Length: 286
Image 1 (cartoon, rainbow, N blue to C red):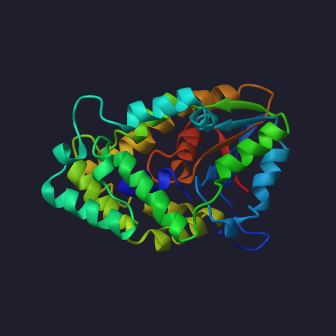
Image 2: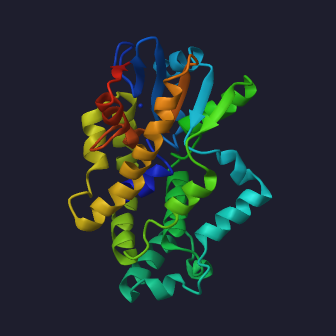
């Protein structure tokens, strides 16, 4: 699911005061938590966020994120990033990509004013993420995402924080998606990058309105091929299943958590809300 790779580092604008949102209350008996679908990069025009986000934040005592991105601001975190983003086995872009894929990558990067020549030791995943960031920055669409906004707010308010996976787990996942399918990854990613402004606008609109059907279409777009299914399973299904026991443990306590995850984790096959509902939890969209 290539789009998830592009918009996972991004992921995922204005209805009426009574519109649905991508915030959900999950409950069973007296215990509950809130799950908020997020977009990891947002233009400043997307703020303020829908009021349901602040409602969930104000009515929770613990704020839960996918991973602790603050670690990437440390020397150790940057070293860890480089370990996962750069080939450690002597491989390189020119070795894993066909001449046609490499040429297409170089041409697109050049259109953004970037040379790929100095990035030969990096994995395609890392290069594409950087191209995406550059393209969004040039379009004035790159800004603080929902996760970072609430991480900063929670720190300022001295809220208790928790995380669903380690930063190493997330880096290992994000920078190994293309492994074994590098040409396909580059081909699909470049197609998406060439229309990323329209894509982001559509995704933000669906996210802001809590339109799970539209989000499901986006999540499942590339899942009709064997490689697409593999990406979908790796990026979404497996992580949702790994997070489910953690969420159930939270729901067994008196504390109320606000859990922030990428919006695509809440739509499509085997999404978090579906998994929780199957375990007998009541889901209410705010």
